[in-house]
Image 1: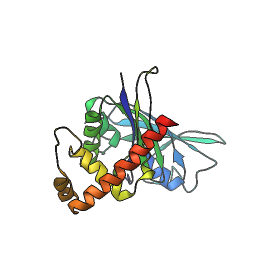
Image 2 (image 1 turned 60 degrees about the vertical axis):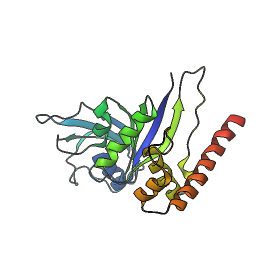
Image 3 (image 1 turned 90 degrees about the horizontal axis):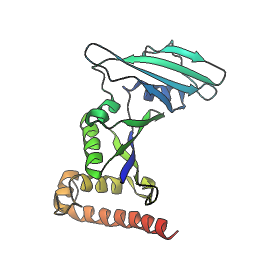
Image 4 (image 1 turned 60 degrees about the horizontal axis):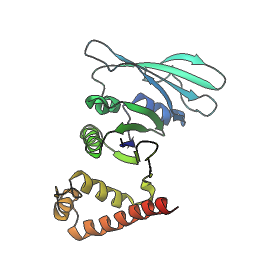
Length: 221
């Protein structure tokens, strides 16, 4: 059975304590533990660890995040904080349909969330929910995975595309441009992006060519 693994990025997540710490400390936060999601009567508790030698400009006792120092060594510092029911959390939005967040990482204020979904529709629904609640949401990496005997994963490197090409490609995909029968045509995609139809078709052609070249290279190489 095959599925999808994706890393979704929230470019600017100032209300996420972990993202804020990565920005203030100028370091990567990639060791995160979470308790169950909060309820109206209880709080969620999260812990994270940062590299004490690399972090700068962060003091858990001198910020508005109300964090508790759990442990300190020469190399690492671990902090804990509580989050209330009313605090918007991207991880909880993802988990609304039962999809767990398998990895949480923050770099320079951006939040990187890795998830696994059964199919494209499930992945698309998750991204839609995030975009309804947060700004700066984009798909960073997408890998198809399956049984080890039949797996042939291909990494989609977004850096191969320009920002505009990625925007057009993602919008077209989400609107059903690639579905059969089509959920939207090029004119409808153009209207959603407020650009011309010819610009949409040009960007789609270029983006698809780059993605297909990557796919064929992986199969040949």
